[in-house]
Image (cartoon, helix red, strand yellow):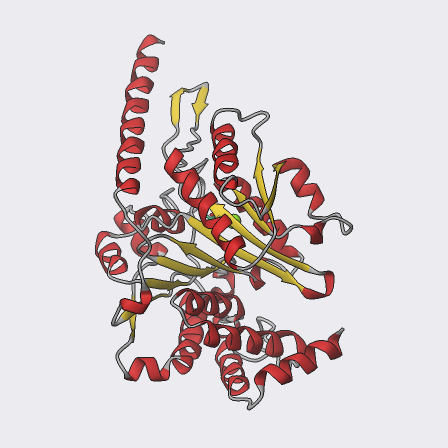
Length: 400
Ligand code: IPM
Ligand code: MG
């Protein structure tokens, strides 16, 4: 028995060393990159698994259309990165094969299709999720997920911490012996500070007055307690923003309370709570398939759809009918992030027009609807509408 404990202690020591190193490199990182000063801004396109390559190339076509001028002037460059597939990852037993990781690090921003996350009992070896690894490797600490349901007056932005919490050592728990399994949850001062600061800055810049911190600090006292304490400190610098703190259980309930939910604006929360709450939130907007997700760090950023890779669609030969809306919406977030807010806004309007208000054609996932490519062309056609903003307003009001 003592031997089991000694072994576990040794492993725990190594994990702590790793986390302390991570803190050092977080602190050494400096400020956010300035896209205005870059030429070219390199946009990496990563297809991923299943329907990923198809929908990602549909979205790429739309982005290239919107950035025609920037591409010809050399301000923006697209870089396709192949091979981040579950087959390659399984073969190399790596969440992200080394050569692909090097390519990813050369990109300033990345548009990423879904990547399969294996779990025990699957046909794949139980390697770490490529998403989680990419977030860690590129230090993409802010997972920003907006949810909008105009007719319900819902306009939420979630700032989910993306590199720590239950995920930091999610693949490195310890089976002390056959009877005892232990996982770890991590909060660092720097890690909590930077995500909370990012959320307050966002609220401040966008003139939002309400910020909600979500933890379970009454039970998970050390790590969530630290998160909440740091929130309290950061909040002191923003006297105009009204902030409150909620526990994750009651927060989950309040999101389904129609009388209360529209009061919330910006949320900031540790990793796992954010994972769960953003799936619930996206459901109000039409499901996780409709949401886009931004993973932002100081030096890199990655934009993705929240949905999975739908291997069954590929097996049944239906990949070309997969809906590229979510990844294209992630593309709009990417445009906004690299300082093209005008193009981002147009793309969002076109997506709403095509997907909700006008619906000249629909993607159904089968041959009963159009292909992702046809839908991408519909979006591009819509983008060329002379008075897009006016058309958008009209159609939106009609819907109401
Ligand atoms: C998400 C996903 C991932 C996560 C999975 C695929 C590892 O659920 O992006 O929310 O848990 O973060
Ligand atoms: Mg999730």
